[in-house]
Length: 203
Length: 274
Image (cartoon, rainbow over all chains, first blue to last red; front, top):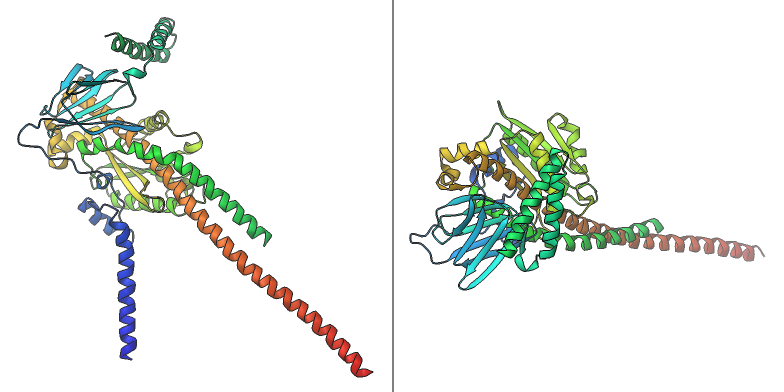
């Protein structure tokens, strides 16, 4: 009888620990820094279900604000289909904000900037890489991290100048002959983007 | 038995198709993961925020046979509804995908404000998703949008995730109150006339970026779940085939034995009678 009891105990303990071991095997990979108020209110509503994850648990934590100005700026440049630059340490970036070209150095005041089509250049020492950016946002944080999110960006080497000229001519013509407001707006946008690209290539 | 063998062939083929589609989408989903991170870094992640009008955007697949992912998404959406409903609080659903539509129509018909189907017919790209996001923003009033989707963790693990996007008014209110968004006030605004305008653009951009990533992750999870579901069903079909073959052989041998016994007993009866 005691042997059976001990067998039952060991079996339940083994089952319990093996279940939690397999669960933990997954959960060591799964991050678990979830908002605690959310988890508590979830448990009240749906006690049998695990609470869903939230995006913050999938992100690497950001560095905290340093007391002195750091020497390098960390740039994250993301596009919908790729992360162009991720955590790259550079000296300066110049971004095409709607208020004009803005230079960003380490220790810049925290800013949210809306971008217009134009060139973005990344300076590292003597190395300068230029991208033509269609539009997007730039966040500059107090910890000298710059997040630039663009809808579309091409490196300047990949732009064909003859295509730009042709597109500009076509769209200027379309703007002149546009009938509806929608066509006018589309042509206007096209002209702005192409002339910015033109200026970028020649300037 | 022939039908079971056919089913096994079909499910194996479906698994191969799902595997190849998965490889195609997985690369894009992983590349798009960087897209929402700056927004979460700036605006924080507030799933427990208390607002008057919540809209739950449920992402699911159009086709079935993909395991349990659609039902988990629906369960999470229903629980979010219960979490956020209350006096003066309003929760509406926006459903993307046929499967969730079929399930939610049964009991939450009155709370569904918009349904979108056939999203995955053409390969997903950012322009298409931003048009969809625009549609949702135009047609639905919200203070907070909660997007429920399956995040692709690995080929066998899909985590239901809820991403929260706040409307610009709520962002301003929260940043004044302090707390998680309190630092937002210290940010200078470049461009645009007022802070409100920039925040509006920001919220819309955030929504389209988060939707893009969510839709890609959900598509990956769907392919992965279909792969594992088809794999287990082909294995099942194989086992069933084995068992049926054994039973068939046994029955065949039994009937042969019965015939032999009859013949032999008939023959021995004739001999005995002689």
